[in-house]
Length: 333
Ligand code: SF4
Image 1 (cartoon, protein in one colour):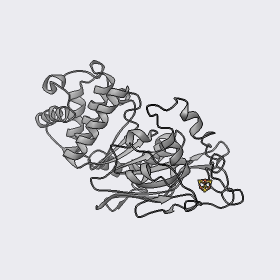
Image 2 (cartoon, helix red, strand yellow):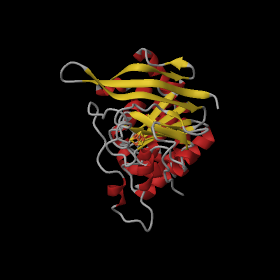
Image 3 (tube, helix red, strand yellow):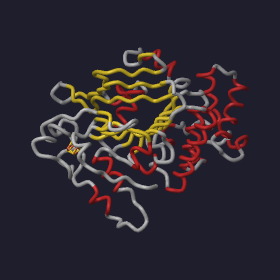
Image 4 (cartoon, helix red, strand yellow):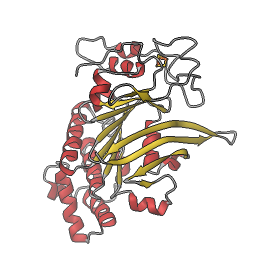
């Protein structure tokens, strides 16, 4: 596939109280092909959201900045793009949906007005055509009676329906890349499944590329072709979905897989799968950043040497020094 998004050695830092800069994301590299779907997966604090915001040119919103590396979109370098250029690129280039759709929708305007505004601003449509596009987008996201509901306000929609409206608003600009940051986390399980099905169908119908950000490996299993697992600000494993699920090459991934609830397993399995918690930026251990939680850690090796992200199979990469010595269990989905 032709590369659409290429992230190389990305580092994002945040200011410290003493006037310095603290890295929160380091050495992050991945490529997303045209029409491809990939997931950035990790626990809260792994750096996945900071990475996705940096890709959208929004690292500065929470006070961060890209301190090194490059992000190219369709061959164009984005890290030094002026804000004016970013405003042109967001919408028809890259669109983003978030966890709390209701916060991104304006309660004072109908959903139709908000979707139409997106189409007018990004595609230059006149009022009548933008209105027709709003109905078309509500149909695309499978909202029943779209021609009527276009006149409703956000509070008249449920949480799941609001997320559909948000997706319609982003899709109205006809983006080439859709970044979805935990878009289903605030929803109950049945609604979650419907939104994931919708994203998959949208991708098939429109060919939009998808970067899906989630703390939940189980959620990405059916949706994404490729998976990047993040831990303590770095990608520790990447590969096709089958590489990562069936043949994990990093003990952290194996731990996340073991924590996926499955019928017949004890519900406290998650607590025992990976002991300890993810270290905060500034407190990353020397050597492998996972070594103090890893059951395979070798003293004198893992707490000393810094692992790189290296090939671990035809389509897989791992940041584990002992990848050739240890045998990890995957899951059957
Ligand atoms: Fe575990 Fe060592 Fe591999 Fe790190 S390098 S994941 S500590 S075995």
